[in-house]
Image (cartoon, rainbow, N blue to C red; front, side, top):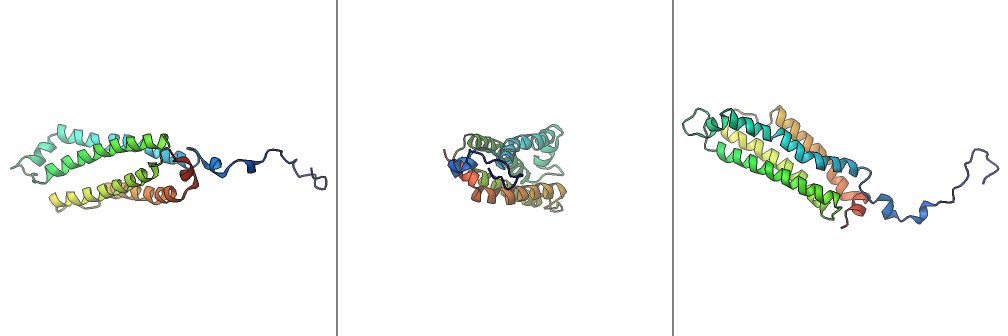
Length: 176
């Protein structure tokens, strides 16, 4: 104890020097909590936002109007575009569920899978926006909703891809 300075707290006998550096940053804590939240919310978000749109498209007769030859809104490209959207969104939901299992299992492949999913989401959003312009020449490639979703995806990728690549916690946690 330092008697010269009465404000100095007594020294603790417990030292963190004995704890290996890896175990200090290992585990699903810190910023990984936000990653985990995103991994869990992503498939739920797709289900909640996208699939009601397809259900309405089918139930209100729009599907028939877009895909039936001779109708005013018909284009031979609508069917492949819509089916591709449904299949890709379903695949994204299943892939995010798989990524969630990798996250909670602390699997070594998680960081690469997560980065791939972020990149795949952006790629699909860009492709989908472009594909819509093929059947509707007056449609904006980046309408307000598309711009918002694409911007959100890019923002998420700009934050979490570098984190996955350089974080000591990521390197120490995803080792199985």
